[in-house]
Image 1 (spheres, rainbow, N blue to C red):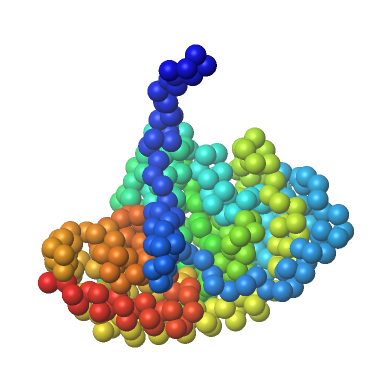
Image 2: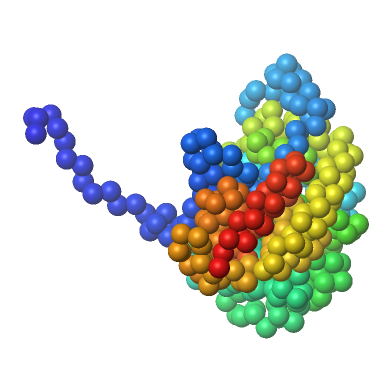
Length: 407
């Protein structure tokens, strides 16, 4: 060993990072990209990302912002005019009355969710996560040293938890309830009647707060979007999270927001000030233009998503072993695939889980999807329908042919 060589001490990472799991959607996307880099024609249905371009008027607003010199730090919770525009949107679309002091703009809805969890949860607090759930919810609770309690909705009820099930799951240690509607990964949508029943339950438990993830609000096929914060008895204990990534095809812009009572918003602003400060100034100006431009571009995308959903549901009818509820929103299908458990691949491997099936389909059909274990539903798989029609047709033809090889 040379004289100037050094010996590194063993690396000891923090317990919190060791306890966390990598996002399974990102992990599957990595595997798909690795195969594609080898020249394999992979169709990826793993990512929850619109395949549409950001509308031109939003891009133009970003260019204008650069020309007008919006290149400096902004207030941590966002430009006042953007927060006011968010208030206007919440009143117009959701009948929710807020002031700019109730709004915190963050680097994506994911950061808004994490801010709320970290601001509310102490070690040992229970967080009821309505399952199936988005992959990052449980990891956020781990980071806050809370305890996740999964509450699974039944396949027969489109994976939706009932108010009675919610009531039975609440304990004196329950601090927070987390859910999304429209739901990622199932596409299920809670109706106003269902949320009214939830509000009655939450009202009876004054120590319980609710984190309502509404990022897929505009991608809704039911004709109505209801928000839990619309019910006065619980409004001050509901944190509503939304953003621009899905409805405005702005995933790469990284901007989201939350609306909450003043004290919770201030706590989230305090936390964000020490981690990222404000989100990008140019992105904020683009988001302001998005809100001022209305939702006509979102409505056009929704019609494409509806058509693709219907097309995919027709295709999966020909795949035995898939039990697939009809999603009412978002851009996923989430079939139960237990009909394939116990089957054997042509090379002799036994399919014992949805994770096995996802890996088999990636290697044999060259279609990437995410196993349901990442969403708290290990009997299911998530397929994104946010892809071109011809890609979706080809993907499900490949899947049907690949699954037919299993014995």
